Length: 74
Image (cartoon, rainbow, N blue to C red; front, side, top):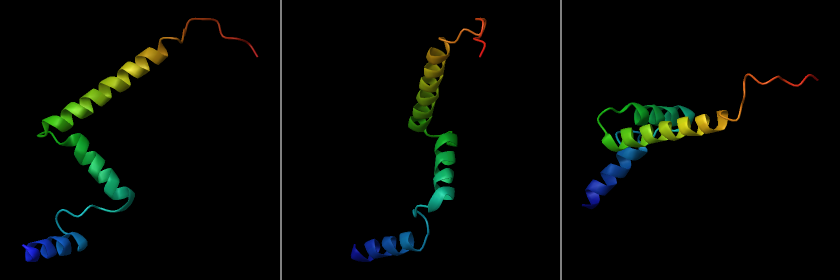
């Protein structure tokens, strides 16, 4: 068991499978894969609920703007 643990630690430290990418590029890669994984129901549910909540927020906050009202003249 200890050999397996040390092997896993060595692979992760060497940047092999399971190692987290570093920096902004790695964060963007993880975010892209999170949003585009079509086979993960939980991820799709979370992404869709987030998009729905963002749409509701935008719709509620833009209803106060009357685009046909006369604008004040400075």
